Length: 354
Ligand SMILES: [Zn+2]
Image 1 (cartoon, helix red, strand yellow):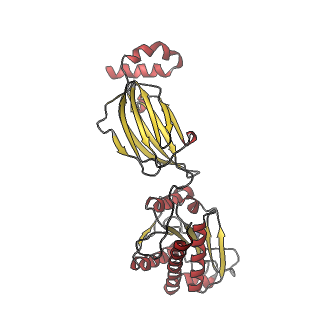
Image 2 (tube, protein in one colour):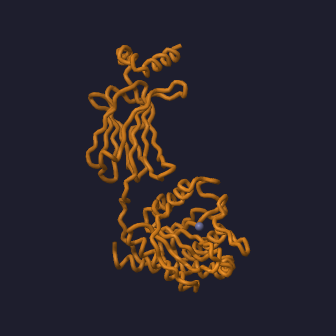
Image 3 (tube, rainbow, N blue to C red):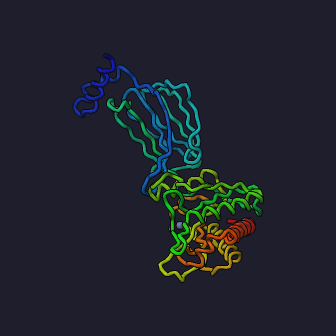
């Protein structure tokens, strides 16, 4: 019976005219904070991430935000706390931790950030109760992922102890390019080479993480490019990788075109150095023509926070390179070239600095 009345009141409260006349009834039952949760939301189109914190309350209130350097506090006037757990970690990158406390006028959620943000970096809003969906009144705080990574690098020479993420391009529902002469699939070649790189790096003492180690989609079958590539970049970011190597095979309408090329994104001097090191070591090892190093606005390179490159090993549309890509000895040469390139990168990055 009580539930039915509550439903009725909430429905009336959401009507603009009913609100003021019913307000006194509302204040008779002060809001209680009953739940507090957070999650990372990824925009399906832009790939931008935000941390969303949701507070469940038993009655509406007007929340206010107060930003001071690395501390963002949300005041919940008139709200009491019914949560036992009043302190906890957040995602660790966008925000570090949260603390709930009681103030003379109500309750406060205090969020500690890794670095100072601006008022445009967060958004505070409320969502009305929705009895049909079983949802209470909610205060929602979105904090955007910082545009620039907070991490600064101080590289040391050598492969031992380095965290290296390898991304075998395509996989599962996405075969990538398919060679016209022998139907060699890009997804199989990129995986075979990546597994060989992993063996070499692991023997050298690196901590190697593959975005996939068998024939499968990383995000899920037939996912959008942003979801699939975002999931691969996220593996690098989550593991705090030192470098991210994306391995592909090229294709072009002219079957005589061949060779090796490496891409990096933007103005990162470390990514450029990594691209140059990988490109020259791979061409020295596999003997194919050197097509050079290029910048590219590839999604996966844009979303990775560490030095990242995309290697186009050879052309599947070139019949002789298709045969080579399918050959384990050639794959081993490419793998050794990648490892040499990573090794050279760490030596040079350690001496040149940022
Ligand atoms: Zn590809």
